Image: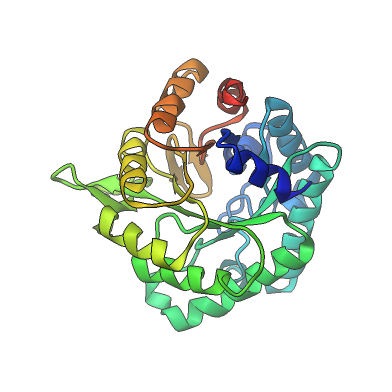
Amino acid sequence: MSYAIIQERIDNHKIIILDGGIGGELQKIGAKMDKGLWCGRSSIDNPSELLKVHENYINAGVDVITANTYASTPISMRKYGYEDIILECNQKSVQIAKKAAENSKVSVAGSVSTYGSFHKLGIKNLIPSFDEHIKILVDAGVDLIILEAMSSQEDIIEAVLECSNKINLPTWLSISCVFDENNKVMLGYNDNMSATEPSVYGDFELVTKKFSTLHKGPMLVAHSEMNVTNEGVKILNKNLNNIIGAYPNRGHYVKPEWKFTDKIEPKDYLNKINEYIKSGALIVGGCCGIGVEEIKAISILKK
């Protein structure tokens, strides 16, 4: 496990394959989802199943697996009464991912997300949670950090970027986008089956230009519907002078589980990913609802 391998592929402009969703794959094999933390407790409640999910992705041909830390944010764990196991849960998630990757050349990413970081809580209250989560994952030995700031407002994304700039570890930023009523690409998301309108947080082109002044690492369009993902990648490619990536979702979240709607065949997912690559993406994979079979299908893009 080493980021040097990933950096070498980036330097040679070779496609990098990320894994797909973790929670959805855990659901498929019967792991229990928590009403508050979704799959966040799986490192404690279902460690063997979590290990299997990582191994399945490695066997599918990925370059990077992501530790199951997306939903185990300190702010959420405190909210749902799990304050006593914040450290244990996150450390075990990293340990399980590292165990899966130990005999491979696969890198382990730590997900520092904005899960549970609602705007109403205020930025000053969110920053300590981001700092705490980053420190736990860095100390646990991840190879890189992915800031999974999907579904978040501009100032929350800026706050997590500010926190990430305090560490000396490769950092990627993932954000989501959505079409508004005029078919314009906006920062925002649409992944709740009960929502009548997408959540829209600002002009995607303008905010990503601003993010690029705060973040010099790769920037990825993630947790977005497949068609708008491609438009987001085009905007990033036009305006940013850094590495671009894409990992879309499929379906919707209805607590405590992910609903696998909008079925897509692996070969069709490969076609979608090829569109993103033509639009400028170098890092590709899948988010919620995208699983091992889809990732296996796109692994042929590695050279």
